[in-house]
Length: 263
Image 1 (cartoon, rainbow, N blue to C red):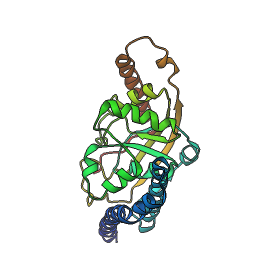
Image 2 (image 1 turned 60 degrees about the vertical axis):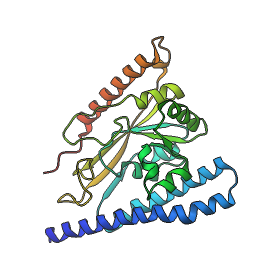
Image 3 (image 1 turned 180 degrees about the vertical axis):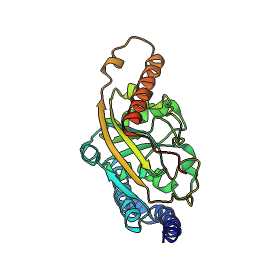
């Protein structure tokens, strides 16, 4: 029975991945063109598109729970539902982290890799929502600050990519530069996936022997007053903030545990 269940979850995972890709295409050729047709204001249209993705990702999370490939434990849902104009940061253990965060967060904006703008399944979604490209670092900082001023919640993974199981977290300076430019603190979350799955090193069909649970919990609000008052160069302040964030999350790993390397 255990082997049968394992094969079922492989097939169900493939079904969910196919549904996700087909859903992105269907939104791009049906819902988003209708929104462009009936909503003339560009910002209002982007807000409507982001809300559409928010609802769609909620459905996708429910689908994964229904078919039995994931359990979810979202204790941070209250903080995310109440968030407005905040920078949301988290560690990044699995491929579905951003899907879960957007599903939980109203008015969610995020920074996406430039390569995704050429992805046939996601290109229409990204361009319709106005998600921010990382192709131009200087423009990226201004775009993030502008999005926060509009009341959007900006989702950022300070690691810049998915974590490697069994290794320490390594943060890049992007999250620090964005927060310092926008003069905003962080809503810090902790994500744990047990047993680990959908990591950067794994294929979608390499499902664990037991059904994984993705947990997202609230850690704290991090204020940046002390950093903003410093007279050092912005690059030095960003480096210090990045080191402090990395240390903060390393302590969170020790306290809450990190997703483990699967055996």
